[in-house]
Length: 336
Figure (cartoon, rainbow, N blue to C red):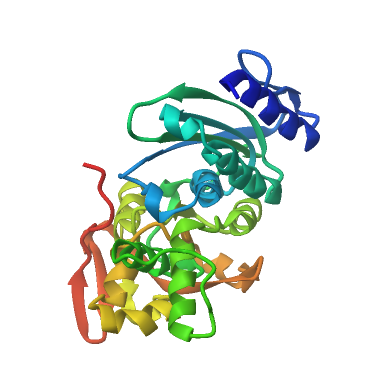
């Protein structure tokens, strides 16, 4: 079909999901139209996925790629303590790929995740490209005015927490680079099962939307960031904006148990994967001492772990490993 037929088909799918009262107009005009709400702030995030930089077509599936396209932006909205509401997705794709089922399946994966959080696709763009696929995702969310959790609110004495586990996505990427592929494999073998689970941790991340809402709406977090570039780099981002230092306790880091089980035979260091690997899309956040008792133990079945503390800026950013104390450098993902 041509692009306009596809857009009409996509529009029908989004309209079948219903429209919140705040959406005055979705797909069909030059721009979407959203009614302003008194007492609410709008939170906007944009992400880009570029073939052979952020993903490899031979290592993923269209539905998984569609899921990840939206998940990375949902994670940013969660890191602001906001509720995701609207999505716009633009896609540049080679003509030969357009002629396949790739695009339809990509959007199926995206819309399936959107349904989980009542996010509505309200626009975007399609274009032809030569060689590589480029996907641009914009997600808008909302929160009560003044309630957005920024990176700049951490203070010395705050406790540092992280949701879920670390290192799984990085391990999945390393396994993919070594030739492992996601698929309907026999899972009775524990090692094969772990490999598949780690691959999916990388290819189909789960944004911590529920935790973001609780931390933001209950005003529990003083500062927050999602772990996309890697714990070491993202902690540096948070500390720089807050003008503070930090100390991490390596023994408390919630390293994915499957990583520890598999990495020894593959010359991979679980601690380094947890510190620098990236794309776990967990939430790293600071909590003042008086708010620590108010933290729930789990949200949506996902727990949290205290991994360190905020310190004065003069103390730098360090890791405590037994009796050894060392400076933590930001060695996560760099695009350039």
